[in-house]
Image (cartoon, rainbow, N blue to C red; front, top):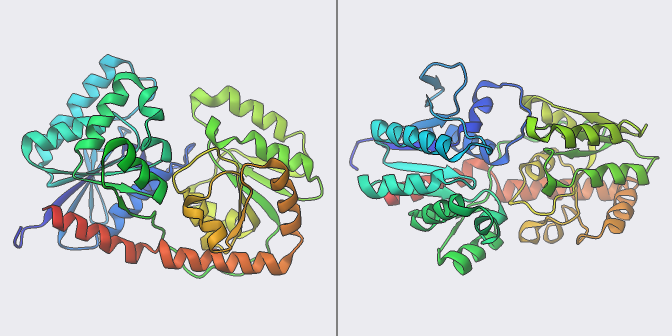
Length: 371
């Protein structure tokens, strides 16, 4: 494109609180990744970066460092068909006005299909970043009706699809005949300060696949250990969240925290002996990166992308065995040497594989190649 800047537009409406440091009830991993990627790539003068955000009480456009934030649409999972059509049209008109060379989307949403339709008409480019393992196989698409079909169209007509791990890459090929590009989640970090570690930590939203009730069960089984649970919720999940909170408050060894501002969350990881993941499935959780950045070992019940926990000795993978989760948590907390070794390994793994300074160059090259 000669000396002209490449105009890149990120679409991730729920990322807005990360730019404004607004207290959140939702630690969105995909949204955080889009915030990090856009912030880093905006440092390169070859690119002009736009970011479409949700509707709050902000001006139509704002500036965050070198990024132009554009007020667009707020995505709600309970939107009806008419609301979805109106929002899709609004989004389409914003793209026509901005004329981006490359649009970057993430997460499972029919907007990906709308974006593919736009880029086909106006001869632009689309990069889609897969946010979760179930976004790449057919399970979620099949149960999502017409929305799933529109998303599938977008996925299969994207110019590049980024996968977080080898499983996603395999599913993209097997289910969609897409040659995905593996692009690991990124993180910005420094060598952590040495802080006394004192609790077992769980961080996640109140959603079924994260199985938060299992962490409460774990705390019940190990009364001699202190546990901290950070568990925000959406309004639609309030009943489930309130039930969890009520169960957690029965345990003297478990502190239940509703919400922590993102710029304060690392202090909880810093003080954690181990980080526990109880999810049924994920992509590559940002919480794993946060744990690794504070030299905190990971004990995971069922999620182990590319077998990294075992391969790098970053913690313990429990192979979906809850009894093993109990035993391994108790044993690791009591073993200071193993805690230190696994924590150092986790930090080294993060440095080698998820360093934003290194990985952003790969994304820049992908964008340049497309344009």
